[in-house]
Amino acid sequence: MDGAPASTMTNSIASAPVYALSERSRAIRAFATNRALTLFVTDLAMLSLASLIAIYVISQFNHDLVYWRVVQSAVIWTATSLWMFKALGLYRISYALDCRDEWYYVIAGLAIGVAPLLVVFTAIPLLSSSRMVLLVSFLLSVLLVGAARSVIHYRFDRDNGRSKRRVALVGPDGDLSRIANLMERRSSILELVPADDTQAAMVGAVRGEATWYNVLRAQGCKEILFVGLPTPYTALMVERAARDGIAIGFAPPGLASQAYRLDVLRSQRQPLFVAGRVAACTPLNQLLKRLFDVTVASFALILTGPIMLAVMLAIVCESGRPAIFRQTRIGKDGKPFEILKLRSMVCDAEAISGPVWAVGDPTQDRRTTKVGAFIRKTSIDELPQFINVLKGEMSIVGPRPERPIFVENFRKDYVRYDERHLVRPGITGWAHVHMRRSPGMEQIGERLDLDLFYIENYSLSLDLFVTFKTAVEVLFQRW
Image (cartoon, rainbow, N blue to C red; front, side):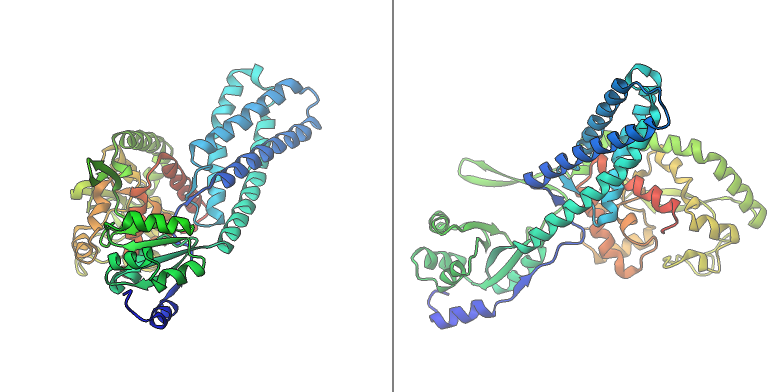
């Protein structure tokens, strides 16, 4: 490489593809310290303002307010909300894919905080002289905090888009574009520099003979990633680049991000890649998730039990028994189980057609009954799956379970498809709330990416967010 004429090297770099990379549509945003601090201070200000306005408004109608108690309750409300935001990770990362998602997070955090406070203020009147002030503070906080956060994220994202760092990939031509597509695309511009021998490229750069390095330095490159593993010349390359304000890194081909975490350790002089358990499978997270599942499923069955009984009666009256539909699906660890649904189609709907992949609006399927069209549109047909959750076959949030015949086909087309079965399948899921309910076969790859993202980034706050968003989407009929 270094023996090439200068003009050839310059042309090679000039003609190399330059990727003006856009934001990854499904990536989380890790907040820098300045953004986290700005969010915290703004939230504190908006929560305090909401409390002051609420106190003023209620005082116009209730002249018996004990102000020191109301102020005390406002301080408790503000501290509780900030703590809940921190617990949900709103000062660390954001799972929001758009502005509406950010509002979901704000509403969920504030709602989780206000519910127990209403109980506490009722049980201990000395803490507050007006629960109405708390409720008005909650409503105003949703508006003020949600709007302020949207503006802050917009400004920071816009500024980040204007200040993109210069990154170069150096390595074999066949690996460059593939690795570039796997890298984070939020704020990077990748310049691809073909080099069949990365060690020779380093030698030339260290000796000051490599035209490609001089061109990158002149262009303001701040980071050079060599495709492959470190070489004996790495220390010299790092030191040479450091003098020019350039960081050096390595991108091993074939080591794309997987669900597991990779830590780099050293045993004497031998570096080791040590794989850690996926986030959703650690013992603590499994315990938290199971407690969350049992709690939500129990309350949901109590609340929706009368609805299910009424619908079951309507189904029997319209099309006979059975009212409950059972179907084999693939669950955790690839084990089959019977999913429960309220029957929405005629009996033996697949007797002639065989297994059918549902696409589009299910209410337009001629096999769907009148009652079935209603319960499919309102998602009432999914309610019996809370029983699957209590039995330990499903979870509230997780990848949607598929039928064995389709799973076998997807396994052939997608190498990582079985990783969906590391966790229990869910009634709803990260993919479920960001895609239409019945995606086409051509969208299975996208859904798999979203399911793997959930498994890799699982947290209790993420389950709370998905559950809350699902409830809102179902309530307002957005599916």
